[in-house]
Amino acid sequence: MNLKITVALSLWFTLTGMAGAQDAVAGKTLFNSKCTLCHGADGTGNTPVGKNLKVKNLHSPEVQNQSDAELKTVITNGKNKMPPFKGKLTDAQIDQALGYVRQLGKQ
Image 1 (cartoon, rainbow, N blue to C red):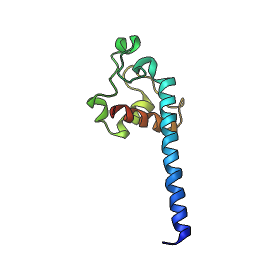
Image 2: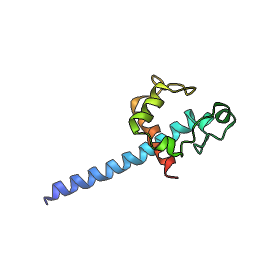
Image 3: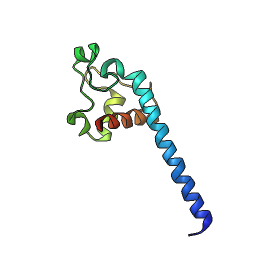
Image 4: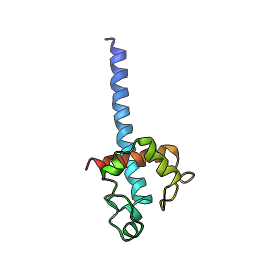
């Protein structure tokens, strides 16, 4: 393989890996600032507000088995007592928060 192509591919993989790490940090930061009141820092919903509203445990199969599109719709438009975040978060931020919710499902 040409040296320039090899260097370019190495740089691309490095940068996209960094972007992924930055998105993960941004997702956790967004979750901590917007979601923990109800869902708790661990995503279980074990908070006074979460218990009162009967929020879903984000680790649960009920949540984790939903598609990314379904979860993004819930975050964007709200559902039941969950408020919508459309207009409060950008699409990129919603994707970052969704990514963090997916990480919670792996814990």
